[in-house]
Length: 168
Image 1 (tube, rainbow, N blue to C red):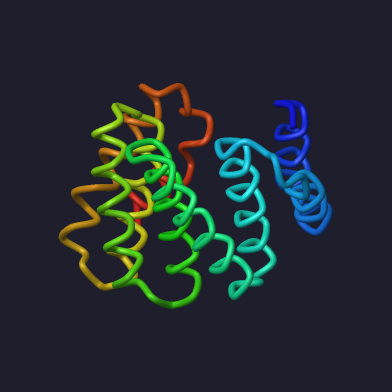
Image 2 (cartoon, rainbow, N blue to C red):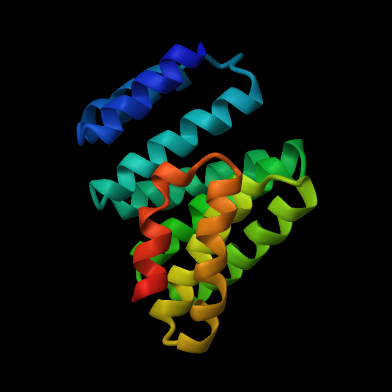
């Protein structure tokens, strides 16, 4: 797999062509000898499109596969990626309390790995889970921190969600 493959899948998803993104991710995941890091990135893209299509059972299965891969191959960055995706899936499945726990763990792993981009994503997931758990005092604490963290990590263009949730 190349970075072009991953970018192509991301472009399909951003264009709303999730079914094609899922098919492209599945095709790229087919080789058994695929390095674990590449497999994790492809699974993340696949799960994102599955959530967008509300295929939540398959998204949960993909997120579980990501977690197993992350636990087998390392902590920090990999677990932050997997936990962030798991939190997103759990929120969409209507399990905000479990999503809250996953998001808190994602933030902790991202901080341990010193990955501001993953910490920002974790803070967004955390705020969304808190919002859905009716913990309004807490999301007012984590959401405003998410946007500056995303800006510092170079993700300011994708900060609309942070602003929207902070303003909620």
